[in-house]
Image (cartoon, rainbow, N blue to C red; front, side, top):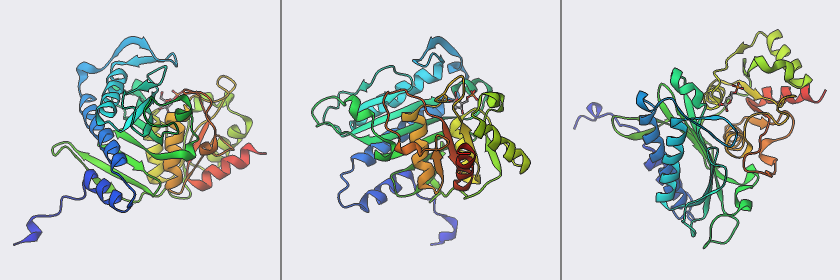
Length: 327
Ligand code: P6P
C-alpha cells in the first residue's frame, strides 16, 4: 500500500484527551468528558459566530452593567447546556449570570467558571473573540449543589483551564497542569486537531499590549514601564479582545496589561473567569501573571465577579513590570 498517498490526518482532541487520561491510572474519565463537553459547545459557538443574523444586541445588560450582545447570551446558553447535559459539572460561574448556576448534577465533582464570549463588542466588526474557562474540583460533599466556597477557590486549585479563540481559525488551548497544548478546528471534519503541542511563551519579547488611552490613570510604575517600552522601541499590539491579545503573547512573546487605575482600582478584568485561567496557562507555558506585583494564582477570591489588575505574558517582561511597580 502506498502510505505516502494517505498522509496522517493528525491527532484529534478526543484521542489526545484519551491518551493523557491513560497516563494517569487514577483518572476516571470525568474530566476527559468535561473537556469534550466544552469542545462541543465551542464547535457550536464557532459556527454561530459566522451568522450575521445573530449579531447585534438585545438591549440587556449583565451584572457588570455591560450591554449583552445576542451572541453573549447564545454562547452562555450553549456552554451551560453542554455542561449540564454532559453531567460532569455541578455548578457554574458565568460572566453573564449574576448568581451561581446549578446544573442539577448534584453528584458531579467539578465546578466551571467561564466567560462564555469575551470581547463580544468586537463581533460586529469581525475581530476575534474568545471563550475562557477554569475548572475546579468541588470542596463540598457530592449529593447537593455546589457552594459559594466551591466557586471561590484560589487559582492554584484549578484542575484545568483553557480558552477558545474564534479567529481566522478556531483554536482550543488548554492545560491540565502538565503543559499547554493547542488544537485547531477543522469545520469540514468537525474535529479539533493538535496543531500546537507543548506551547511555551518566549522568555522575552518586544510586543506590549494595553489600552494606552488609559495611561494617565495607570499607577506611576505602569506609566514608567510604558515609557521604557517606547525607549526600547517595542511595538504596540492591542485589539481589545483579551483572548486574542493573550494568544499572541503566548505564541510570539510579549506582555499584556490591564492595570488598576484611579477609575477602576482593581482594573477591569475578572479574577475567576478571565485572570485565573489565563494565568494558569501562562505559568504552565513558562510565563507569568501578576496584578503588577503579586502572583494572580495566589489571590483568594472573595466575590464571584471580583476584578483583578492583570500583567501577563513573557516571564522577563512581567518581572520588569514588577520592578517598575516596586520603585
Ligand atoms: P478596553 C473586552 O471587553 C475585555 O474584557 C477584554 O477582552 C479586553 O482586553 C478589554 O476588555 C478591553 O477593554 O477598556 O480597552 O476597551
